[in-house]
Amino acid sequence: MSIELFNQLEQKVANAVESLEMLKMEADELREENTRLKQEHQEWERRLNGLLEKFRELEGSETSVS
Image (cartoon, rainbow, N blue to C red; front, top):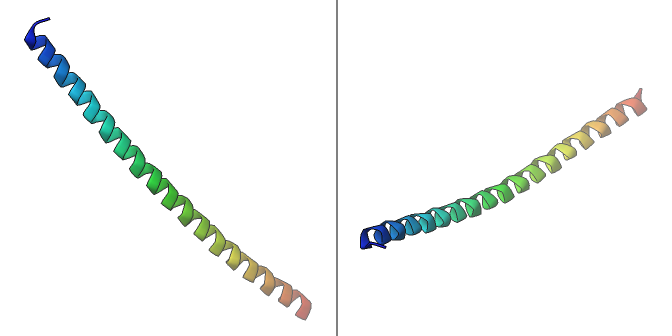
């Protein structure tokens, strides 16, 4: 194998390794964002359920007053 071909192969391997490292970093960032979004979703759901419960209590108190 000529030195030029070996250098090209070496460069392609280096590029592939760099691409893999970048993809791993991106995957880690996406996992972190996914975790953050899940937590945010749970918080919104908790708050919404609290509001719905307050509405139910209001409806219940209106019904018992009528």
